Length: 282
Ligand code: GDP
Ligand code: K
Ligand code: MG
Image 1 (cartoon, rainbow, N blue to C red):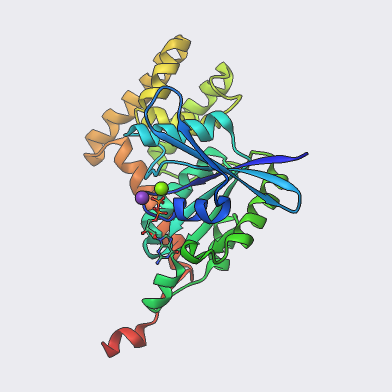
Image 2 (cartoon, rainbow, N blue to C red):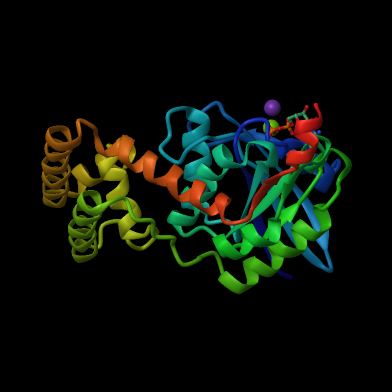
């Protein structure tokens, strides 16, 4: 019998556990991620004879992990390759929340976005066009209210369909980070592909990005792999020096700026409309 693993991911307090409880009820168990004290919650949900293993991941803002929770969430997604990753997003803080969604997409994870807390969005007289967002991002987007289970069935149906269509992999999103960063990424990507460094499980461009962000885990693995790491670090150092001299900035900030720029431009294309009339009346 088919069993699919579906991860619930997202920022802290976006409604993941509420959604997890709504889906799995009493069929839950709690453990720990290997080597860390972070709680691991999983449970089961059956839909049309398909058993879904649902994993409630720790909250994370970024895939460049700064905390044990973030590292556990990332390791799960990279190591266990869930069939679908449902990114539970607080729809009221869409711009900030999509920062993580975009990173899942760059990683090539099969993402479904649950625009949660839609009750709050409506109460604030905001209008979100989830269909438009889905078209622009190229991933399913479902509106939910986890607190009363609204949209949960549709969300699960989308996740199952997405899982079957992608078999654990989606085409990684490629964002432009500007001419200087893109050139460095291209050069690193070629070296990573040639050395087959982590390419069995990760997009080469994502590994290159992590090098520019000085990701501890990826750089440590690269150093263990030998000469390639010196090559990648040389490109990264050269870029760092250039950015410092020309723009007085570093690669990490530029990468974050471009990600936010990408998201802001998406949202301006008809995704977010605030009811201005209502605002003027107050
Ligand atoms: P997590 O950190 O992502 O697991 O978030 P939780 O599930 O613990 O939810 C954080 C808070 O948001 C709790 O107080 C929930 O009751 C509340 N919450 C979750 N989903 C919704 C929703 O759709 N609408 C509203 N208004 N509140 C919600
Ligand atoms: K919480
Ligand atoms: Mg939680």
